[in-house]
Every structure is written in structure tokens, then in C-alpha cells.
Image: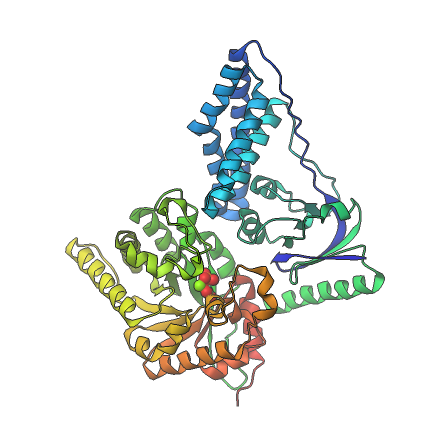
Length: 543
Ligand code: PEP
Ligand code: MG
């Protein structure tokens, strides 16, 4: 028996035979060619085929994981036609008289290296994409039917890494789970996996693949990120039991649909859901959430190659509001910066990006960008029940500036005879210790607080949330954090505001009673956790 530890990106347990996914070796040899035009024709034909394949992968992704997640394949189609990329290939074929496969492979290496050396993490991620499309073009030139193949049996798919196109091409009916040596939880692959509901573990270590064998029995525990190969009978039965319990829990939880979030002694609480895209609304409705407590609007920006226009944003916000009406939808304004980078913002490299020009700081430094978003939000407000919340607040002055920009936007809309609702709630995230400590000053200025425990933890405990080596120093139940939440709740209520929690801690059912006792009014969690938290609430007696 051997255990590997990685990061679970989708919580579930799978037990099965593992299959090592090998990318079909794309053997590219340098050949001298006589007829450059014929070679260019081969290249064009392969590009056409590759685009066709990508279009059908895009359609599949669109059906299975929604538009936002499918977009990566549109980007791939665009990359195939990228002028610089194509010029480099054609120049090699014509200038050096080499075969097209070789020119594509070398160009892919050069571009990937260039992307990897960029400071911007978004651009760095493009390195995998350029290799992915280039391998596809080469495979098309060699008439390979597919980049990989696997058996019909249901398997746990293991790989060094998986390109987004490979993840989405997986036949979900055959794959029980997947486990990779590399990868990060913010990669497209991880995001796609979560949306496809496939148990997944990433970052299992560089020697992961060399230490496992096709056909080995394995357990993938997506909750803890543990991957066990050739488990002994005892371990196997522990996990079979766990799997069974999870299934039973899921079934039981379904019975809670339509029921109230009420404690045994009658205290009610709202349980809302967090989303990153309109595509997640299905899961929100399916899990019977009372509303949306956090729509991370920055994903709209991260998925675009340029600033999303007011109209494009309006359409998305309107769709979310209409789909959820009459339930409340709280949309958080842009939280770009730190780990969430969009290249077209051209942000300077920072020594400490988590402490840098992120979120509201960026918006206040770029009022044009901020006002575009606010206009789109207010325009959409007539289509449902909207709340707008602002991230990373640290001072009264910032909030004053924000509120004045909101008034300006409303005045401008009114002057243009554009309709907006008068009942938009405004709130702030309590995710810095500063905001919690001055919450008595901030509360009278807003309708609500929403505690972002992910950042509140990182800033209070001085633990970079991106750093996997800090786990033992980062006590998510630390008394300091709980005290800051309690203090903020008291100040919110004393000033007529309500308070919710939208960070990951909201889903921690070992704290549900603590939060209820603090007077927390709303917990906003991933859609899959809504019924679990409802269950916890309904078992609590506060009297
Ligand atoms: C948080 O910080 O807790 C939060 C909800 O926001 P994000 O995780 O998007 O920073
Ligand atoms: Mg945050």
C-alpha cells in the first residue's frame, strides 16, 4: 500500500483500477523538404481538421460544463489562427526548408517558453494551451485518430497533467476520478473537473506516475486529497464505508429540499450559494439555495481577453437576476489582483500581490472600469432583487468614495432616462482585520456585511492563502478570526445592518452553531453544501 498526498479539487471518494493516461507520443523528426508550398498545404489541412475537432469539443463542453468553461476551446481555435504563431511556422517552413510538423513543434516550444517566462500568471497558463493546440495540429498531420485512448472499463485516470481539452474530452461514464502529479487548483482543468462533478486530486508530486502501474487498485479521496495505491483490506473497507455513508448522506439530504433552515428552537437563517458564473445557477436551484450570497464577478473578466463591455456585463447580471427572481442575488464587484490576474489590465508586478493593488483598490484607481461595472449592475437591477458588495475594504474613506461613485452612476443613468431599481442593497466584505475592527464605523454606511473568511484568515494570521506549506500555521478556527466575526456581527446589528459569511468557513458545519449564536443572518456556501448546512442548522438547539 502506498499513499500520496495532493489537493482535492472535488470532494468525493472513488475506488477502482487506475489507468495511466499517456499522451500519444508525438514523434516529431526534422526533415528537409523540397516543396514548401506542398508543406504549407499540409499545414493548412491539419489546422482545418484541428479546428473542426475543437469545435466539436467546444459543443460538448458547452452542453456539459457551460459557456464560461467552454470558452477555453474558443480561445484554442483563435490561437490556431494567431498571426504571430502562424507567421513563425510559415517562416520556418519557407526559410529553413523544414517539414511542417517540425516547424509547429519548434514554434510551440518557443511560444510556450515565452509565455512561461512572463510575470502574469494568466499568460503563463497559455503555455499549456499553445502546446495543446500544436500537438493537436501535429496529430492531425500524422492522421492520428485521437491524442489518447483508454479502455471501456470504469477507471481512475492518472496523469502527469491534463490539458483542458483532454479533461473535457474524457468520457465521464468511464472515468471514476482523476489524479494528476501537477496542476493547480486555479487551473482550467481543476475548474472544469469541479463543474463536471468528477472526484479529482491534483499536485500528487513529480514521482507520482513513476510509482504507480496500470491496473493497480486505488482509492481517490477528493475530500482530503489522499490517493492510496494497492490499499490493504482494512483501508479498503474504511473507504467503502465512507463511500456508502456519503451516498446515504446525499440521499437523505435530498429530503431536505423545500424545508426551512430553522433550528429546533425556531431560529431561522438564510442559506445562500456562491457562484462564479451563470452556468452554476442550475446547481444553485437544484440544491434549493435561498439566493446567491456571492457571485464572484471577476470570473467574467478572467475569462475575457479584453475588458467586458457594459452591455456584455449587463446581459450576464440580468440573466442571473432573472433566473433567481424573486430570490436575492448579491454580486461582488471586481476582485482582480493577487492570484486573479487578467493580462489586459497590465498590472505591474508586485512583491506582495496579496497586499497589493487588488479588488476595490484597483477599482478606485481605475474608476472608468469600476463605473462600467456599476452601470451594468444598476441597469440589471430592475430584473430581480440585487445586492452589490465591495471586496477588500479597509477604511471609511474608501467606502465613502465607493458610495459617491454609486450615486454618480445612478445620477448619470437617471439623466439618460435609463431605468434602475431603488432597492439595491449595498454591502461590504469583511475580509481584512481593519474592516472588522472598524465595523462599528462601517455598518451605518451599508445595508449588510459579508465575511470573507478566506481572506480574513490570510490577513489575520499572516498566512498566504496560496502557500501550501503554511497549513499547520493556518488554524482556520483561530480564536482571533472568530472574535473578529463576532465583533462585526454585533456592530452590524447595532447599526441596523445584517451580516452573512461567504468564505469557505460558512460551510464548516462544526461551526454552524457558533455562527448562529453570534447572530449571523446568512451563510453562503458552494451549491453542493447548501443541504448539508441546512441539515446542520435543523439539528441545533440554541435554547
Ligand atoms: C473570501 O475571501 O473569503 C471570499 C469569499 O472571497 P475570495 O475567496 O473570492 O477572495
Ligand atoms: Mg476574498
